Image 1: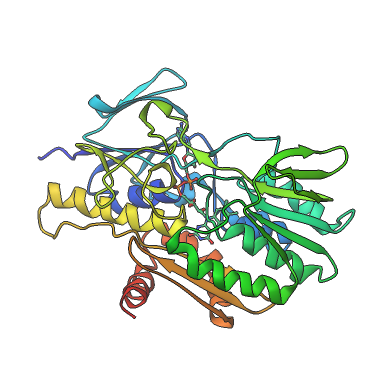
Image 2 (image 1 turned 135 degrees about the horizontal axis):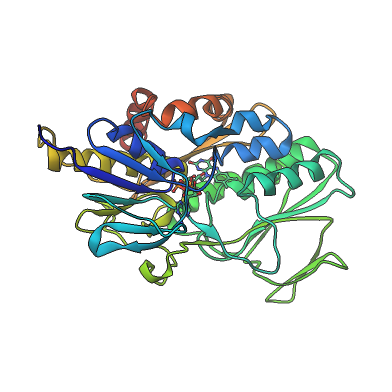
Length: 370
Ligand SMILES: Cc1cc2nc3c(=O)[nH]c(=O)nc-3n(C[C@H](O)[C@H](O)[C@H](O)COP(=O)(O)OP(=O)(O)OC[C@H]3O[C@@H](n4cnc5c(N)ncnc54)[C@H](O)[C@@H]3O)c2cc1C
């Protein structure tokens, strides 16, 4: 009997879970992930605004991994790239014929700012939003690569819809967005203006005075806040593998770091927004190419930079942003995208098994052609 090749996946988030499930049974797959629960991060937006409860956005890791996938509940402390091996916090060593790094990005700690990436962050923001003491909200991000650049806009839209009387200010560190994000910025700026959200472009936080509740930009502009929700940039915790971006360099089409070692999702330095959609498409490309190497009964695939994000914008309106390495689009507002986002909270769990590719693939194809 031919021995199955071994795949070792570090991280059981969006990218790691999908690739593990896609290759389960075809390779001997092990996922190393320290958390008990898998968090659907885009659902944090629904959660903090009070639209869904925790059970909708968080599931036990074991339940999202196919039964043939082995799960080691531990944290990887060292990656031995040349050996396609890792060491864990418990001092154990695991190795594979293939190694996939899918460890996401960790937020930098700056000015004690509270972001919105974890369920704990989400819980405290949800409490504030439920019963806010003062309705002067400042939302935004710090310069650098953040998760889902649409998220600060979306949180602002939702807050203003929930509390039309609130002052909502959105701070955007870049004066001009990167060219592929221009359609999104133009559409979202119009939506913000209709809703009465103040958008400050080129506002880079220089200090946060929590006592007097004032943030100051490097240009000396001061903004008062009752509640501050600011996202900080991400980087990998595996500094020794990272480039200047703080993320792990890969070939942008094959996601290869080194022969047999791939990095997928937020952890890599591909020049595309850090989104679950990008993580999903990258996992599929690498899964396909591993099978191409082992079975040879298919074509080799290339990741073309596809990323996608549906955003709530009004009480029943939404927008859809799509881009790849060369082109981008921002569509809406329309109820179609609102409901697309809303129902994806249920569909997400099935997407972790490749279950909705029958919908996703034609959609991306038509967006890239039209
Ligand atoms: C508020 C918010 C809104 C968002 N909205 C959208 C949206 O509308 N659309 C969209 O497409 N994307 C959105 N995103 C982004 C999306 O959630 C991420 O891009 C996606 O989760 C990235 O998947 P990943 O697998 O790379 O990382 P993650 O899903 O973050 O998973 C990484 C996993 O690696 C594990 N890990 C880390 N370090 C180690 C280690 N040392 N050893 C073992 N395991 C480790 C972590 O515990 C985690 O489970 C949003 C994100 C946020 C926070």
